[in-house]
Image (cartoon, rainbow, N blue to C red):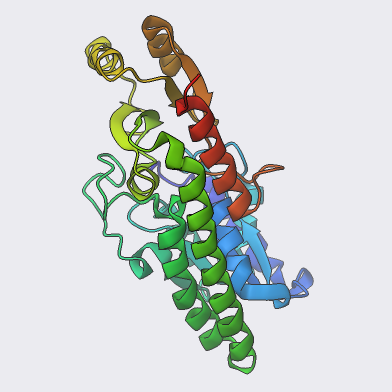
Length: 294
């Protein structure tokens, strides 16, 4: 992750000086990415102002906070991170901008461990993209409710009740996605980078590798050649790109293989994909359409 610019801390200091004038009407909880914020809001309910830090279309891997981004931290009582090295910068900003905030590592609550390279290898149990599995997201809900209840004991029953309903809805979503993807079970996925390990595992797909084995690391001609051989040998029907990254390498691979480029979105936060369930449905439909029989 890139170092946090000095101006970010200056913005924090300026915001801290003005907190008394701009106190929010509701307590503030901050999540680093849109799908995580959606899960947090499910538990928080209307009593909280749940904010997302990273703007839509921006990858957390290359995110550099602008003053308007870091100022969103200042009134936070709770900062929720993905964990596993994915958004370590959030802890640094929280300590600088919202020193009284409680940090909640959601990845730890679903059993995701920190790997040597964050998401470099996409290994199950270390890949930080756990939210792309509704099953794992459901496991994150109860610990979130406990965190909210500890911060706001008078409303504890509401947080716990919403958590139970939210976890049940996520498991129902998982069953829905499993049925939707059943016709393409066993198909091989070649993606932009290692985002989809849990999704692929949950729904019976096959991981064919990634174009960028680490975010921002451009593939070499040899890397693309190996992927091209795999695409041809397994008769892969599409290469999957993501809106947060340039599709240039995916298009080169797809052109050489004579297949299409399809888009999936691990982050969302845009109309039609702002809600967690809508994002996962969008992705499941995109995988089914691109991997299905012509």
